[in-house]
Length: 148
Image (cartoon, rainbow, N blue to C red; front, top):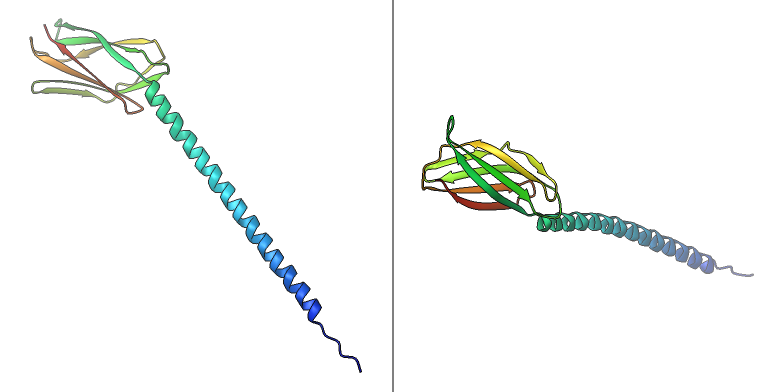
């Protein structure tokens, strides 16, 4: 009488199941890490581009002159001296006790371009006026002028 054992077959099946489970787990981890790496790379690229663009942006407030016919106003020229285009989103004028905020003042300026704007503003003689220009990237440029 011969006894047959089936241990060898069960060892092979167990090994195949463990190898399959390991391969599926490894494949899942590699896929997950690729998705995370791709997402991180996209985020890092966007942050880098935003910061570099913010650094390359430059604006100069120049040639401010005052008028009083028919009412008091000032003309202001802004020049984009940076290497990229920018959008002016806010202009604020402030002097002693008077503040004028023009949030809807959207001006797109390419590199090297100028824009002159006439702003109705009741200025007082010999009183300094703070000019604050904000761009869409959040940069703030300040200047101070003295009314005649």
